[in-house]
Length: 594
Image (tube, rainbow, N blue to C red):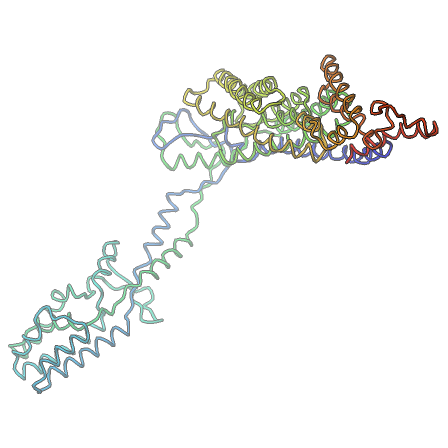
């Protein structure tokens, strides 16, 4: 027993330090979390929409910087617009076109009988289709006309390929984007900032319009010259060599857009942002949102008062917790657990405020987790109520809290503690949940009706309360078994598990020391009834009575309740008898530790 006492004192030596650290953490979090931007701005969150009439004149409460999204977007679009479509002459396509022209000219001027078949074979090898019946028209030309045609074809093709022949789809994409010019690049060289007009760009679809006037000059030298033959040949043989580099164009536009700096406007304090009864523009709504981000609700005096309030709540709450623990040897441990779950609850409040800025209802606040956990781990409703008072005081500091938030938290916490009973059957947990959700939902509705909550929020409020109770119960049911085993806390669940007769120690005692086991059962029942009568812990009394003679399992024959006719003490010295009888206490303690 002395060794156990020494271990206890060694383990509890650090508990005051842990309590002090947790008190500082809880107080700090309770003070600073309501001041976080996403939470502190929630109470001043303007829910105006574009076109809605302003209900009041709104002035800037302090200097802030507003980013003009419209002007920024205008400048970004202008920067993108300044990047002209980029096109370049493709040497491979140009070379292919010249090669085709050269082969076509030689085959056309050849005087062999195979000229016609050779030309059709050439077109087939190049996957070219003579849709305009060009070859048959060329075969009708005289030798002099054919020579003049070939010379004119080469000159015209050279001019077209040097200017560039663009795919019609690319041309249409550029014009549909609203551009009338483009930027021509030649390999790694470019024309600097110069641009070329799209009106002069040649495509196979506009060669008739753009080249016909050019080719008329050749008629003066040969009256029988047919310009359409040249145009049809170019359409058939030439490849599009002016390539629109859309990927590079989009990349440069993206870079130009990224280089545009945000248009920032300095808004001095007391600047009138919105006039009453005027429709709000999109820019004004964004300005109000920016103002919310910069707004800070509290003066230095208010901050000092809030700091003093949080410190007082923590100190008074911890002191009351210790007093209501009534000198229990686990009072410090219980306080550590209470402060820990309070810290978790306050952090959860900050998380919920971050996930749901401006839309937090009272039923969303995790005010039930801490009192429910303390009730389950200590089985003392007074301690759980003190915990509920502390978390209720902390949530009252939230800028989203109304005048009824504190009373809502106290009411729901008290109702949960009142309706929840120690669960000894599986149905008890379900009934606790049902009673808890019904009573707390009713209390939440009443408390929020008193402050004029909009009727369309009644249903979300009730659903939030049901989810709050459900999630809190799940967390408590999961965490309590872990802590009761790690910290060896005799919760009602744990005591019921230990007192079952199929417990290994009790089972062995029932086999080897039937008299002692029967005696322990009778004492346990008497202790349970007596403890229940005087208001003590009946389960703890029952477990203590069941195990008080567990040490007699090692030498059961030396105890009278297990003897028949023979008495072992008749054959040994009295001093040894005394030692054996006393030893069952030490043996029982050792077995209990195991």
